[in-house]
Amino acid sequence: MGDRITRQLVIGLFVALLLVAPSSAQVKVGFPVANKSDPTPQDDLPEIEFTGTGEAGTGHLGLRFGYYDQPDKGEGNPFLDEELQVIETVFIADYNVNERLSAWGMASMDIVTSASIGRLDDYPKQTGASGDYYFGFEFGASYELEVDRRVGAFLHLSGERDYWSLGYGGNTAYDFNNGNTTVDLGANYYFDVLDIIRFNGRENEGHDYRHTFTTTLTVRQLLDRRSFGEIGGTFTYQADFLETPYNGVVIREDGTRPPFAFDNDADGFEIEEALPNSRNRGTLFGRVRRLLFDSTAVQLGGSYGFDSWEVRGYSAESVIYQQLAPDRLNLRLRYRYYDQTESKHYDITLDAADPRPRYRTQDTDFSDYHAHTIGAKFEWHYDERWLIDIGADYTIRSDDMDFVFGSVGIRRAFVAPDDWWRAEAPQ
Image 1: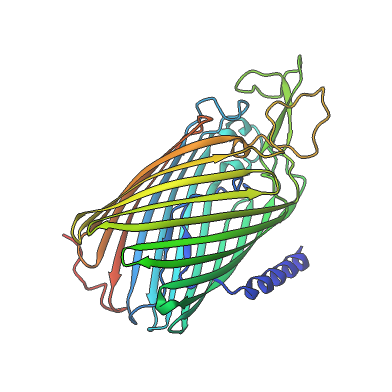
Image 2: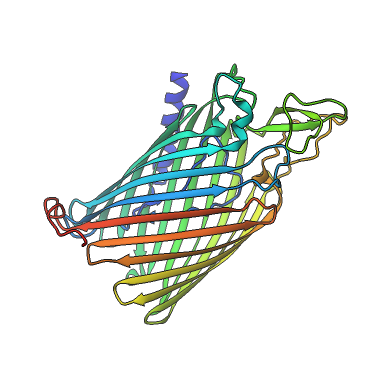
């Protein structure tokens, strides 16, 4: 195992360095469900963006709490409880070492609970579906080579009881046209090791690997004094073990009782999910933001995603940014529509009378559905140092797998390493 891990890490590092990645690192703060292969051609995770260099000795410290809740209304996969809750805590820091070099770090812990593992209580161990505790760490730096060129890099490490992941990457950004145009090329590589624990608690398959390489090209353009535009594309290649180990697929068989009761009392038996060992994914995206009034801006955007498993998805989004109190209180309102087709490997109607397909999944995130997301976020600038925000998004899916995502964050700016501790706290 050691030789293979070393070989893959060296290969991944070499490929990533060929495309040296992002100067302003965009760190996703969401809810990773470890072991689960991302089903859709794109994602919609909130992001925290570190914009790179600034005045030497300045920086921020931040703390964020998030909550994700997906109840099970009996739809989606009719055979399983798909209720899921995640509580997340994230600590964030960034610091400008000098006018050219900045560094940042992030540590997160998730507590994940899932009703789908309730039926496994009789087994010696719960499967990865429970999640239990997730820990993640990221560190990065951004350096300004010249006035119009920046480079950055990051390192990621995360894991659970039955999974760990190592990732790294970076970017390079160039400014043209008197700084009005920026071209940003980034790449990253993730190497995951998974302990194979199946839906029934069986774990005699040892461990396996997953490799994910992603490259992104983004072009940002100042259109005029009040308008900003961005277009880009992302390509991802995944290889090796891509199914979710604890996912099962139900085969219907009349007159045969299952080893446990399905939610819909169907007759049948369960076997492992099986998916191809490679996947190509691509996403094209764009957005335009316009300042309508001194205190109001609007943004329109969209994306189109596709992959080699025949999942096709597109989104359209509108956002309103409103200043409620000058330099104090801001409001962001958003609406997003998303629609996707089902994967060619998805089938909820498998029957024992038919040959079992080589590749099979009943994960509802690979199904055909559309979704509406509405959200709001308030930002309160208590003073020039303290920023507090609270927000929530609610997503309504056509298959009734609705969910809510909420977060509360607090950020503190400091001027020098020994100054922020002594500065007055909010009263």
